[in-house]
Image (cartoon, rainbow, N blue to C red; front, top):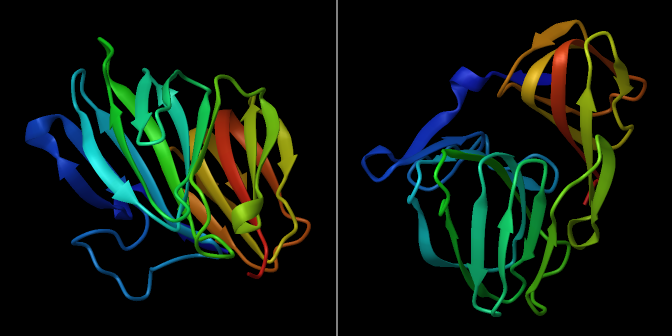
Length: 218
């Protein structure tokens, strides 16, 4: 188990424009050749947008983009004509496939925080697709078959325990709260990268929200 602390993440974005970004992997101008990906996961960004701030239209291709909204509302528009507004506890999945353009903005009146995760698809090409899930229950699985991955969402109370998936690659991201995992204490923004970790269990110390990726060997 390789634990990466919140304070170790690369800070990006454009603070003057109301955009603060925290990157867990090599990203943009921050090139880290030893931190390009883990399993299918190639990015895990925490984005904080002030009211009125956002990302203007830009292009993606050959990437599965899954976004989890923590606070505020995320307005999404893309070149396929889709528009959605996702609030806390909601998820969106943009399959960029052969290419798509989109915008992401905070058109609300309060700050917006979301966690955006990029995964490499098993096969390139295809046609773009989009799905919005306005609200997920506290114990839910969301499949991204294009990347051979499964996202486990867990909302847990203090003293709860939850099993960590048994898979070639498991990525655990703590959205909020605290827990013990493999003898290590993890807090908000911390992450654990696990290989060959069958039988692991997380013990919640303070009410927590976890995102856990279960990924194959590729």
